[in-house]
Image (cartoon, rainbow, N blue to C red):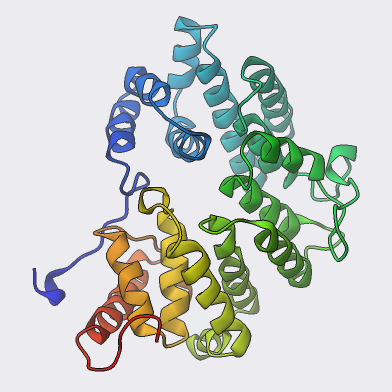
Length: 335
């Protein structure tokens, strides 16, 4: 395929073809493929990822409810019920729906029931972390515990510890904690977010996706500032920006199992390396995406972030520049 003929594809399953099949069935109101997929999911990291994607689709139907009615003792069905309940509560809160508080209460109960049904599973605790961002004033005691280290904020540290105990350095758990930081009425500052992601990354082992977290905060800083494309460029050509991109490349991308790489993380890393002019370093990251991409963070480079066509154009321009660098003399990777 000629470079100009390439068109990226967005799909919530990304490279996970088994998940893609389950989603197709789920959209038609059938739950058996979802049940079988989760039964065959080998580890907590993939389990967390798959249940999250499935819930985003299942939240618009009663398919999980039908599964629970058929298999009331299924722990997986209980976890998916919690997932769907949380997804609905978060959406209702975002839209200021009049039933938001009711859905929040129902989701909290569903999470506790799932934790009881599947005590070794990190997902019920990840779900409780997702709900914590709705408590913007930190009214609940479990959302304002003292932090485990200096320069951190009071928050749902007990929930994070429960998720960590079951699946250390669970990717979604730490992203949910970052969302909690952004939602805090009493803080929510970007400096708190920076302190948190640096603390998380400093403890994470090589190959952990937590090493990509600083790149998300840099994009959020730009998004909040409402700057132009030139302003976003300046985020990456600074010494700190280049350092964050290099660390994510070497400590995460180079060390991780390729089968475990999050498509959203790959897009953030490719975007950061491209922005810091490390084109040859970004090339293998673009190749790892295959035919897939995510509109974020590329959409923030456009004047209309809600327009997917604009994000695709920026992505294609960056991809072409970085893959083209491999054909240029003296531009080997990690230079």
